[in-house]
Amino acid sequence: MTTHPQGKYADFESLREKAVALRRAGYSLRQIRDELKVFNNDILNQLVKGEPPPAWTKRPNAKDDLKARARELRRQGWTYDRIEAELGCSRSSVSLWVRDLPRPEPRYTPEEQRALMNKGLARRRAAEDEERQRTRTEAHREASDLTDHELFVAGVALYWAEGAKSKPYDRRERAVFVNSDPGVIQTYLAWLDLLNVDRGRLGFRLLIHESADIDAAHRFWAEIAGIDASAFARPTLKKHNPKTVRKNTRDGYHGCLVIVVARSAQLYNRIEGWWSGIVAHAQGRLR
Image 1 (cartoon, rainbow, N blue to C red):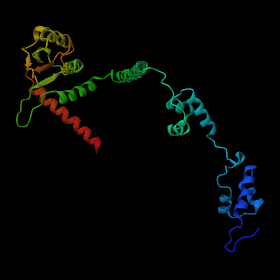
Image 2 (spheres, one colour):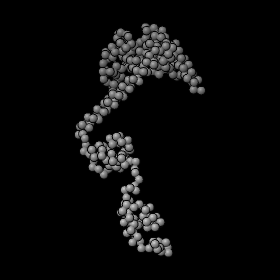
Image 3 (cartoon, helix red, strand yellow):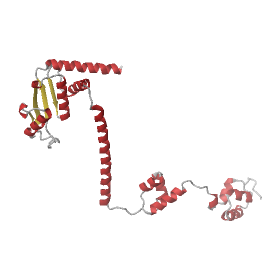
Image 4 (cartoon, rainbow, N blue to C red):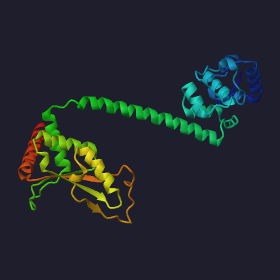
């Protein structure tokens, strides 16, 4: 074969006709190169430009089967999410493979879709509630068998978190406890019993919104505290602020119970001392 001095092949068009014929006959580039003795890759590619390679020369693609399956499922009306879950491939791959196919008709009406969504949401919430209750039950079992010492420490922490505290500039030294949680109130009363505080020294009073059912609240807290409803002092009423939107207005609202221990200066000072001891122990563990 003749070439130009610059090394380019002469009679390119004639050579291209032969290359195209060989390509259409199923020759690979390597076979065409060897047949026509064209060893310049750029020229070889120009000779067969526009002619697709024979199928037997294509490398098998590991995803060809997935792609075919994805297209089959899409034609059956499957959504991207279902195809993705079924084949275990990425959403971007599914989109690339099937985006030329017509979009399937919705399987459900908007009403049916909402019903299915609500049903699925209800199942999820039920499962979450079950797991939440399982956690609570297990934790309850862990903490239900307290020693007196553990109750003592818990009571000190409870008072220091929720009870009235004297200030350096205003020393009152009275044990006053206020809370709206029945369990907290009962734990506090049990702690006072542990300290041998005579129940006769306890005074009870409600702190409650003026719009609430006062009598019902008295009955509620009397049962919680194990006292007679007549033992309550006059309630402290909170006036309603029309600019405030209250959410604690339903039947479950009973206000707060205030428990005052009479002649409690010594008890209060002991509480301060107990709490400082707990803090010192915690600080020692942090060092």
